[in-house]
Image: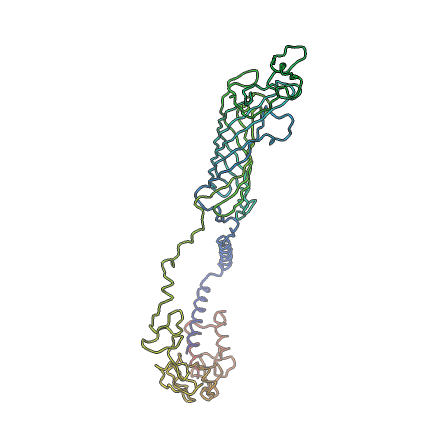
Length: 498
């Protein structure tokens, strides 16, 4: 009767829904449809809004997950641009000096960070001319501290964060202290004299017809016009401090001032812990006396310099990301692999027959022995010597052709279809409504068919499956003047037919 109950349940659900639908006023049908469409649209929009968004490109790679800053040290060259210049050179780097920097940097957000930078180095220039008054030189020791704002271009807008190349821009403000000096004497403490022929001598230039001051040279027969006459070279000692400007104003120099650094760089990520960076910084200074000379050749009249460097960075705190905590962290999987719950000598992971009774001998797979190979272990086999290939029940007993009725409760043993194949005669005749909805050969219907005569459309005294289906459809369409109780009675009559 399982089929009867199933069909009855379905009918109840359909009938209940029909009653609810029939109670709704006809004039509200359009409004209900409109509300249903609005609800469906809202549901789709909510589903779309809740759909996961692909954020793969915005996920930070391991290179930028540390809360700690990076520390870098670098070295490079410092090139001066100001009032003193080498008139014979068109390239800024002709007279460069070494510089060193120490930097602490923190990438606070994906595209923005901050840095503190310290710089130490020297800038120098030597201006040569055939005009003696234009031969000046200087060298300044520079110490600077600065604060920079970093803009990273590997922020998923220009370059993917996962790239090993990270270009960046930066700018900020700094405070500089400097100590300018000039080179006025050679190693013998003799002053330099610049002659019109371009040579540097330790004596003033000889002019024909004037008194020669170097009497010792004349006594030795030296010719003052000879290139070897007291000839010398600049020794780059820069022994004389410049406390007052080298120009005619002789203004006392303030040896400090603000700077504005702007620059760009390229970082290559060697690993999650280490980077190598190449950068160039242009320093605009707020002083015109870095070279000890006031003029108008600098930026807005002030001096400037360029620092290009190569540095090595260590990302503090970076390492292999730790896995998120898991509920399995406290589980000893090695111990689990060696567990043997049924005590048969075979570990659980290799035991094909868990829960074997204690003391039973088992094979290499942990299963009790089955000598007759009927699928029922010997310890619970009521027929331990069944014929090989015989169909047996859950107790290992051979099933014969007259044993079909005993299979009703046997759902663990041999499947029924195998029994039917081996013993075709055991298959009962399909009659009545239990196995099919075919009309019985001998039955003429149940008593009281007249109550449902309008449903029996072919007038044979039997309600067929098609006729009961039509009756249910007509009821819900309003074409069958039955009450709910009478419809249930019809369904019961249908199943009670013999």
